[in-house]
Length: 376
Image (tube, rainbow, N blue to C red; front, side, top):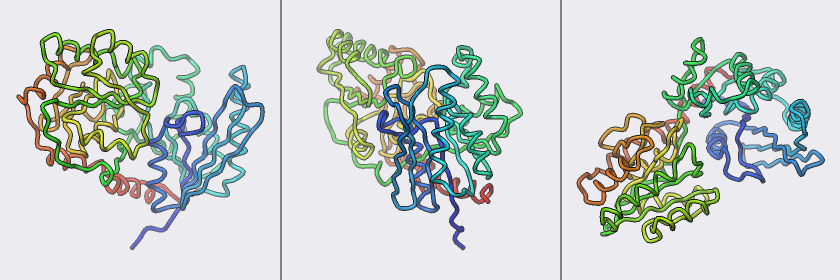
């Protein structure tokens, strides 16, 4: 018997908007996924220093309604909070009721989620993606940031993390919490397996924001330089980012790698599968990830990954890729060399099969179970 349709309100600290087109795009995709079964309203507020008034932007696409309120930023912390609270009131003027409230990413909008829970008067499910629970990051955070997280977690009804790794890190700070696992999903119809092109030049791919402290783009380029210093030139690394790549383009040029490393992007999500499909391996060289959806996308196309032990690749099975050491261009170069010289080969169809646990269908089943359990 089909489940009765409910109204789900979603809020997130990260969500695509006119100032940041790609931020939190995985939250938007999950909202779209839930909207295939239920009525969904996304409520989001965005401040900007150039704004002097409030502007409500409402978009309706089938079962999905997106309400974004743009508002002035304010100077002091109190003024910022006051303006954000007023913006939320504007957004809620468009929301009549809710059967379930789902929030994503506690920082910085956790207190707004607390207010939404109070206004909506329904059960609250929180899904955490943030990296701020890692010990080194937590030590650097301000008292205010930690207070927001503590006050938010204290009031959550039902708590989920996107990976086992993140769950363990949250529990190290909040051991009393009961936390389930709800991974991000991928569209396995869009990201699909096609046979790899045969070429003497081995092709590698990296996709990220190139944020230096986390993604370690320098290590990517340094690994390529180690290979060329050894006389290995029959490879190419395509680096795709939705942020500026100039700093790293200049660095690659300085390392005489213009023939081995190229930069491109940004691309719409629908344009990314072809890059995976044309690659012999995907490289994730991060110092930290909570999930890493690019790894799941790579596997869905039958592409192995060369990855540091982070996110869903923290314990990388040998059939799915090669585990590399964190912050070690030498380790990455050695893994790339194995692929270039075909010392290590992979079964692409088995890799594809392993990705199906992150498919839209599988994750929607888990979300439906959560909705059935907590809505109403």
